[in-house]
Figure 1 (cartoon, helix red, strand yellow):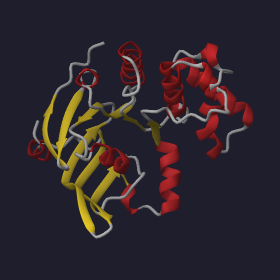
Figure 2: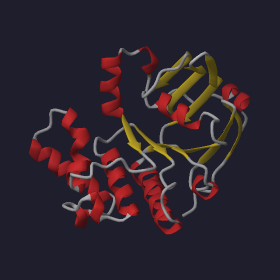
Figure 3: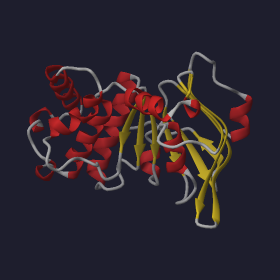
Amino acid sequence: MSETAMAENPQPEDDLLVDVRGVDKVFKRGSETVHVLGGLDLQIPRGEFLALMGPSGSGKSTLLNLVGGLDRPTEGSITVGGQRIDKLSDRKLAGWRANHVGLVFQFYNLMPVLSARRNVELPLLLTKLSAKERRKRAELALEIVGLSHRLGHYPRQMSGGEQQRTGIARAIVTDPTLLLCDEPTGDLDRKSGDEILDLLQALNREQGKTIIMVTHDQLAADRATRTLHLDKGRLVTGMQGQGTG
């Protein structure tokens, strides 16, 4: 589906989770002005597993950061769950992010001096939960990703796939509205990558998580329910993913 078609056929309001309207993003690099996104519109319904593809520099990760409240648009609006996040103060945006966004990175970003359970607990330190409740939730998240047997292990004692599963557990421990994944299989071999994609599909299908995944890998994108392509900061094509696995 084209960008124009999406704009002409908006999602029903009750089903719409993410609404990006007329978003531009401009960066300054010394005297140079870099236009990363230009006039971008995007609608994402609740419960979708969306893959974003495109060449390096096309704006995929920038768009992911904007939807996750990690950055702000130069122009345009971003609404998530009925909340105009581009209008929030820095303090309120940080609180919104802590409550609504789970992040999965290519290189895991685990703290090497902390066990798997303690790594997963980190986002909960921003909440008012007791230490007992934080521990319980971290253990449940690790159980969901199949790592109950690795609670006390440190990142150096785990495989790349296990480290990424720990990263996913950390991302879901707060029960976020959005799960944002930036090249989640980019540092893994195919077998481990397939296992991570199986897990993401299960979170989408069985727990109804809305997932946005940036990837260069067509096999990864095929696991999503929809794939959109960016080029030079604009959505150029879209197609249905296979959703297999």
